[in-house]
Image (cartoon, rainbow, N blue to C red; front, side, top):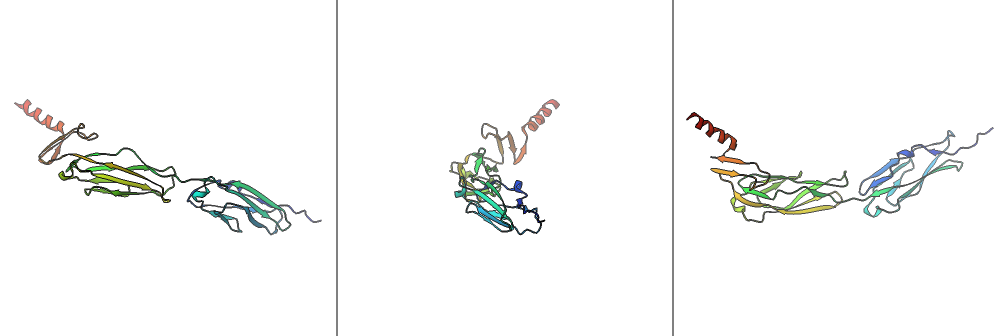
Length: 232
């Protein structure tokens, strides 16, 4: 008595990713089995988008482009035994489009001559796996920057009243970008002999007193003179 031929079947369709990101590699391995030991099985991809390629051992690969976002990304997998029985599995891939990164936060737009200016630029990207590059396209000569977004420099007296314009860009690996321009106003010059700054001059800076180039907290000065008067 001969056993009836039974059809094969896919065994890990639950592992198939149904979404892909524009510009990023997509892929998976599909597995199958046949109740009839020894059957020769043939795997084919009967329908697919143009960006998908496949191999006879069940490897599916591809990288979707911008033109594939919102398009027809239907896939049909078929495995057939030597008796003509087959299993079919249909699914669709949702291709998520790449979005441009963007700068976040506010800029520090005031500074004082002879006082270190420091500002950390921040940014975000709706596509969390994007590879981002920060650049400063133009800046005053006294300002330096690094790839992590840190701006720093020591403006001089000659920079008072100058434009001090900064233009910066954040770009992802697919060329989507955001550009921002701002100016740093140099409002005054710090001298080594005497300086009192308060938040009315530069928001965000605490009160600072410098005498002969030494930074001394005002409360220490007040305490010092109070002790002198008490000893009289």
